[in-house]
Amino acid sequence: MPKCQNCEYEWAWWDTVKIGFKNNKKCLNCHKRQYVTPDVKRSHFLYYFVPGMVLLICKPLLNLSGTAFLSMAFLFVLIMIVTIPYTIKLTNEHEPLW
Image (tube, rainbow, N blue to C red; front, top):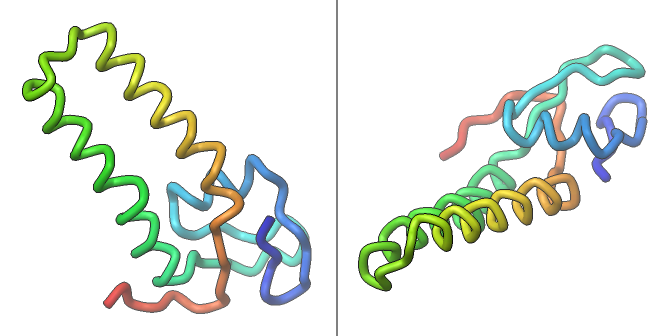
């Protein structure tokens, strides 16, 4: 789990999931705003968005039924939510993506 860069407070799993989607959040301990690093944002794009798009593109190519597609999409989202907290790194300053 990530730690606050100000006070070294280790974030809880659910708070880390939230910052993974919002990209910034105040530390529950010292109340300083923490941001997700640009490197992590780029890696999340590669590891989560690109495979999701591939899944959408493959649906008509593989002739997947609606149930099979929704099951695969649900599994993909579940894996994403479970793994996000273990890949997050925090910083004190908002840095540009590129």
